[in-house]
Image (cartoon, rainbow, N blue to C red; front, side):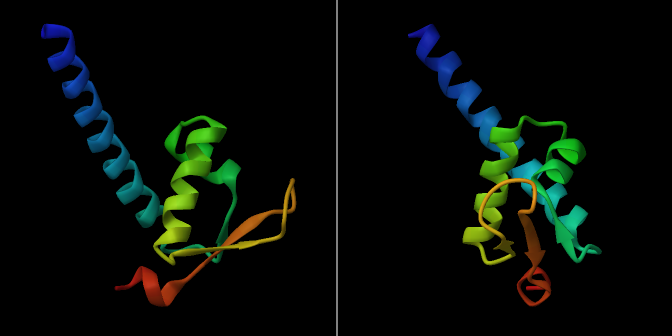
Amino acid sequence: MENFDQKIKQIEEQKGEKQENLKKLKGFIEDKEKVTNNDVEEFLGVSNATAERYIEELEKDGLLEQIGQIGQGVYYKINRARLSE
C-alpha cells in the first residue's frame, strides 16, 4: 500500500510541475512572434519529447499554430487573440 501511495504522490507532483511549466511557457511566448521546439527545450530545461508534449498542449488550446511539416524549418506561430483570453 505504501508503494501505491508513493506512486500517487509522484503523479500528483508531476501534474503540478507540468501545469507550472505550461504557465511559464505561456509567459515566455507572450512577447514572441514565433517559437521553436528548441526554444521551449532551452527555456524550460526539458527534453525534446517533453517540449513536444508542451507544444502539443498549447496547440490543442489554440495558443500555437504549427508552421511547416517536419524538421528544422518547423516553428509555431503565437495566436495572440487566444493568449490574451
